[in-house]
Length: 127
Image 1 (cartoon, rainbow, N blue to C red):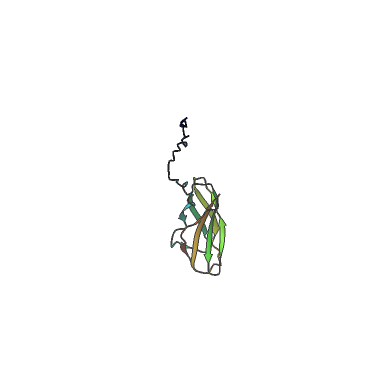
Image 2: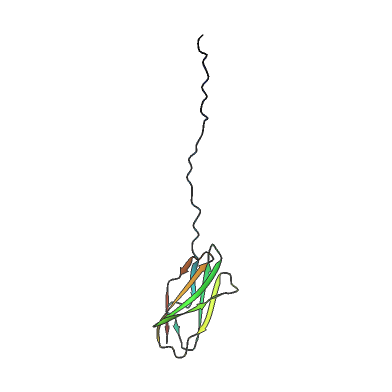
């Protein structure tokens, strides 16, 4: 008797679709716009010194500070949020015994993920 043909099972059909994965958008560090002191501003010994900057970021801002540099060192001033959204400020007084000369000011900001921005240094003159 002739052999009865048997049906051969077919492998299942699998459809693959190739797609490109896109990375989630990177969150940038805070953006700092220095408002005060002005570049090349002249400060008188004994006068009030105001540090002010607008800070914006995709995340919560966790720290904003002004760094005052002088020959031989630096001082840091924590800045507080003002009543104007995104504007931070700190105030101090230029000491009456300060030596005349140029000083540097940097405003630094960090978000709650630790991303930090340091604004370009500005220079002021103490007379």
